[in-house]
Length: 545
Image (cartoon, rainbow, N blue to C red; front, side, top):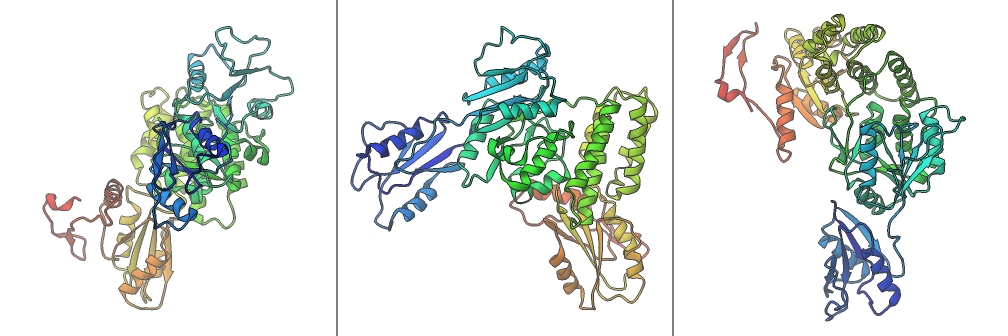
């Protein structure tokens, strides 16, 4: 559980003042117990004997501290918490914010053991100041074995046209300061609400309205949640990285401000809600998984068609004219890959099978960044034309999820400085575009070539390739020019007469991700002549990282 450091703003503290004592006691009476309360003692005074709570850290005044602001900074330096909060004498903390948890199923199916387990994981939360809102089936009374007073059973209404409308009605009836949801099949960690409430309570501004975490059981590629906040909206435009309604905790006033769920997008209402929220508010990413994701349910042909139509509407709504082409390609291709992953579940109807074949062809034609995954395309196509092959569907879906590209900017910028390189440039470009790691941009920096370098560079139909032409200034200047316009987190240079092995970028990227303190990953080199024939082959032990 995350530690919260609470700093008393008074320097030194006046414990003779009843209001000050009440303020500090309101902190210690919080239901979130994993905290430290940092208090400056008066000069030459020992900790009072009636304050024996081990969570209180008494700080000793220092002559070097010139006032309250300096004392606050010194307390910050000594704090040990993952989050920071303050208490001013006279202010009183509420023991706990109230959380409304809404079950997304309309109506709830309590005969399903997975649904019951999901709701029980909410009620087993260590954060107890909550209400669980669930819709009863038509004409059914609350089950006698669910006598927890925190459960509010809502009665279905004829005016509600579906799950999204029911979610909005539950929002209108909710009483919480914060809102969370639980989807049947998902399981909450007992600490989920405690950690998320503490994170939002310690936020510096109320504009921070969302707390979320990684997902246990997720099949999408790993991505750094802790570094997303500056462009969280862009990450969500590429893919619903929160994956389930069960993930975030949101301030209720933030949801009210954007009008709740879009009832015209029943299968994508959560994703649309996150996109609209992150246009207006900020979020806190917690480091550890707090929700375990349910297995993916197979989509029917009708649901798949509805999902595709809704996702296209989302793209039209949230993609902008000023978005770079590579961002737009990523967003559109991610949808196609995710639809393939969702569709490759058993059983698949003939209509859905035909639609997936068409989507596979489109992806092969349009997304050259995954051409290196020829075996995945072949395996998928063979499965779709042989309905009797059922053993590979789940693994095929997982493999397509791994092809999602989740970063708004390319992870790696590859730079090719070139001057009159027509003889070898095409092979060099091919060796880059055929990398097993595909989330990169390729910057070709033409140093004033007078041969066919421009035509060769622009003959490749790949959205990751960008050609820039300059006056001749030499290879060092060309590399600097490329680095100046690069958008990737990592840089990699290749000369126009060199070739890479297909796994070069993947291995070096994995090495730098594994060892974050390292700044460079490199390998040894084989030598070829102008015809591409090997003239020197280093021992295998020298070729790997």
